[in-house]
Length: 261
Length: 289
Image 1 (cartoon, rainbow over the protein chains, first blue to last red):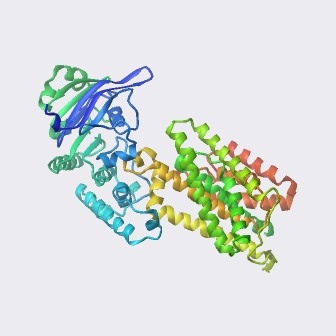
Image 2: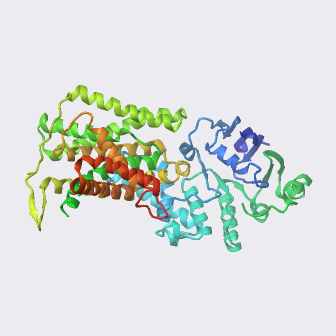
Image 3: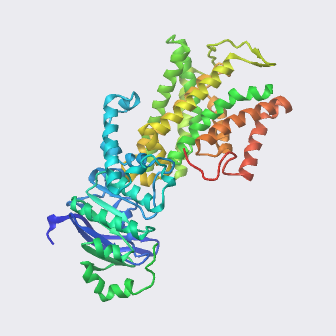
């Protein structure tokens, strides 16, 4: 594979939780502007991989590189400015705030202003605030939540909360977007909508890494799929090939635990 | 009725101190034992501004809030952040705040000496009779400044970007980080705000009680009791807890015996922890900050 085309490189990552090998020397290269699926049965280590990339957990060994630069010493809140943003398997919106507030908070980094200017509500802080608002509204418009901006997030349906989280991640203007089971809990119409969103993201030069249980979603949007099982990478390739891979069928597709986590 | 009213001003003070505990606890999960000493420093800074710079009460209040708030942010950045970066266990962080308290106390002893000082009240302390009960103008001042500060804090948390970031960190520290909020900065904001309201409480009680270097211990403990009774980590709980404690103390002092006042306060704490450890005034769906 052409190295310059790799935007995120996961190199020999291992992580143990006590005696459990959650990830065992896993390497994945994610190409620029691709939609990369990570699949595997429950407990395969998919979310652990995301948590390691975003610095919530520290790997026991191995490292991550973004565009060839290691991201070992980066603290989680600085990841956004490097261009990594994520959504969560179990939605983590800020309760008690409106849809717009939730998304605008995601632009904290891109609107650096002097504390003093914020205190006196000076022109600089106001124009930054307006720019943030525009961005947030654009992201909400993109996911189709423009009509709900002033609603409290607690009152939204599960599927719509997912869309808000999606918009929040987008508003941070990432280059790499990590989506942890974005389709979980969505009805078929919402899933269709989500598929279209992910497809149009690819056209907009984003790189998407997707954890998903729903094979229909994976087969439809992913250009490459990596399969994890018991912390090891089992297979990698185009979705059509993965579907026919005998080991994968044995470990994952053949089993009945395909339900949503 | 009279005892009830007498409890309100001191209740407002307890509320302010309790707010400090709850704000920091909600944001960073740390119990800040130097909260009471921020009250003490606020009183001393106010005293100094008043007597040596010869500025009025309002500027004393304002300057004390600013100076002590900066000190609070400094405590977070200089002492707590390095500890957390080394992944020190939470108990070490709490002990560090105790260290800050002891340093503050001894600094105050060194600078202002062991003699109790008193800050004159900007308003007269002669009681006014209103509809059969008497209140002093000082009481009214404490209550109104206290409530104003609570409203300012509320609007800060609700409407400003730093305030929203602070609420986000309090709810979900990790998710907040991943949208680009620096939690250490939010913690610093929480420490500054807490120290600032503590300092205001110090100025407000300075005309009523003597200002001494170790006044922080008792006022800090009472504020903590108020925060726990109301539900630690919640803003409405801290306010309600403070007023509740003030009124209970006043009733206990007036109707039973003022000698038993503290005993009753702390018995109340034990009873609350025993029967309803999440706090008296908490609704079911708790929302931090």
